[in-house]
Length: 339
Image (cartoon, rainbow, N blue to C red):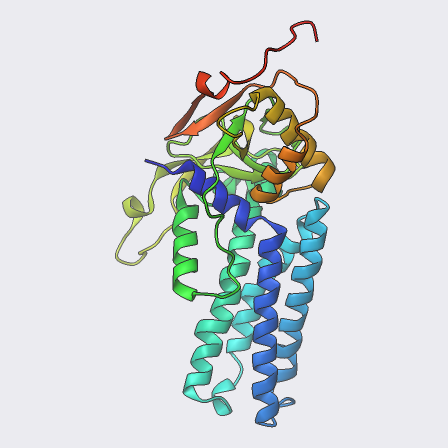
């Protein structure tokens, strides 16, 4: 059974400014490592070592700038920065580094330092791709885009959990941020909806109207056009051949209506409508773009003095969702129907 709370937490992690800043810290670490090693061997000006240094310096700076812009709701720079690193990494490894690095140092540079930077930038790129380009590909009349309109360039199905487990466990990165502990429970806010192609009203994680069987959650950005949902029709295992061991799943794009995914209200003493209104206010007033789930939950609590509105919500449950159970509402104060 899908662990929807885990999936939502990972989506929020990979798309958070804090995650971008951790990537910048890791880049700084590699920059210092490379600089100290090159200076100690007196090879700073050898080959393209200066260019390698400048590449890491630029990457760190742009990750920070992208993080700052993401806090204001603009994710284009962080996406472009992440997308461009693969080519930069390939160029670095084509240099004659073996001529002045030991085998151990070269292994660390390629399989630890560059691999870790590649992991960060891949996770950022994949997490943001559909938010920025999904609708463009889906509605484009360009033949090239039409041929790719069904491709899910995000995390098909529940693949985001596999990616998180692989990267977090493999690299043991001191900068790789952990998931919230204790885990956060999430709800679907049914009072806010956005159909594929419409302008997104809220930056954060969204739940598709199709449900999650063979589908996935997604990240969407306020002001962009809402993307389609992608249904997995053939898995990697079904498409695997002797010459292609890890093909991407085959997907088809479907227009649907999406709803936001936000931290769940406390189990007692909180009217569900008040919590949902507070969530909306916290999003708008405290951050303007996307807070982390912990920040959002904290700010919601500080917003609990706002007025009560009719905003039905549902709890994520298994492969679908259900109405909020009456035990969450039994302690809520009576509502004034005339208000």
